[in-house]
Image (tube, rainbow, N blue to C red; front, side, top):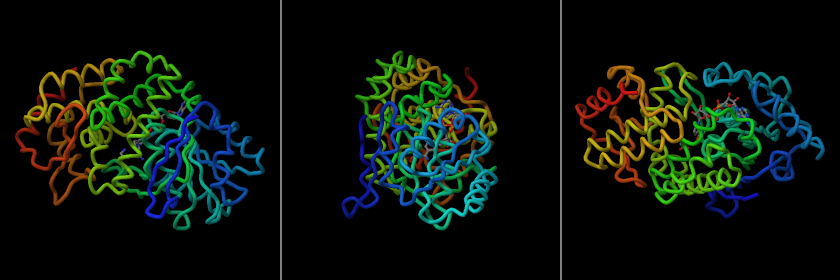
Length: 366
Ligand code: NAD
Ligand code: GLY
């Protein structure tokens, strides 16, 4: 097992938390006991993950005298909404959960974002623990404290920053993850290489076959390096007033794809991959990176089996959907663009004609 700390403290220890990564950590509740103020916990999961892992986590907790209260949600991005959030509140109130009753998220990013938002707002905040079971959640969404839900008009538009007390990323859980979901997780791993860690990017290029083959050692290294990158960014800018925005490379386009196609049709990681190709094309047209750089990025996503062609929603629809991006400031779109492979920057000066040309020329090819 490896442990990475997210250091958020002005006062040492305060709000900082560990990410424990390794085989079987889900069955080691000893790693979370110190964060459980009472002998009852709520476990939020979904109809796919609960049959696989709820019993394992629940009985491990029971063996330490902790009683689990399960809340099982429908599975899918299309359920990351107000109605599903309310199901959590209904259950928390029915079970008379208190301010000291912790909520554990057991599942992928959808369960984590929903359960985290519930934890942030129920009784104005209860202790929260992340047990991510997808690659995407282990390398990204379980770390950093972004929680929330989608709105029909815009992705992740309602939410709260609310940090977990501890993250347990069990690499064994990835054994049951469908192939398409594994690939979607790789998209967020590639992101760290592109925005700030070129050596990691080279490592990913060399180790893609092993990642896809779920080589345990290689997956472990990829998760660790991703979490280290994410922790450093979140430590520098917890509430995204600066450098954290770079973690949204490809997301302005990607969120438009997810919403425009209907939540759940494109996986988040798939939309991020195709969105990053658009961001790279835009960066090239802005004179920031070369055609060879764009090709290197496209080749890497192809190697990962991720889509490199964004769907042709039409320029007007893209512009309308991107107008609801969280980075919009003073009505102006802001894009994370690449200055080089391994270096990103936020730009608000993209000329409308270059953006329109990129959307027209780069959304139709297959
Ligand atoms: P997901 O939560 O929908 O999980 C993908 C699928 O895998 C689901 O069907 C799920 O039930 C299933 N699953 C989960 N674990 C499994 C396992 N071990 N074995 C078999 N099946 C399993 O999707 P995701 O990719 O984990 O997360 C995407 C979501 O995360 C999006 O809503 C995105 O906006 C959000 N996100 C949030 C952040 C953040 O910082 N909060 C960062 C990135 C993404
Ligand atoms: N996934 C983007 C962030 O956590 O900031």
